[in-house]
Length: 169
Image: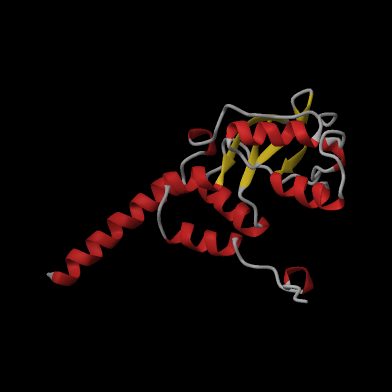
């Protein structure tokens, strides 16, 4: 009897997990997209990030995603080189090889993409145009299970090598 109880409970949990993982991106994505133009400055992008408490902004032109800029891009590609954020264009700093997802894909797809690409944010693109954004936080708010734990581990795997060494003098 004890064994049957736990098997039944396990099956119920798995059914719930399948239901959640098969939810569509459009059900949990953010529709209020904050975007910048390629001609905007790094400073303007940083101000938007601070005002909206976000770490990545799609770079769009005529509604089409041209790239994505993150707070880390601004620091590592601009500030760390002594460039001025108020005169450096977003187009000089953005990543142009953008990984995206569509509104009809599933949470499972988002977890898989984020884990594989080691990214935390995905633009949602429909018919070539920006339709929303989904973050790892959006996913975790909607799902708590082993798949999330595994994805967190994959996304946060540390890189190794000299770039991650500590310099001591």
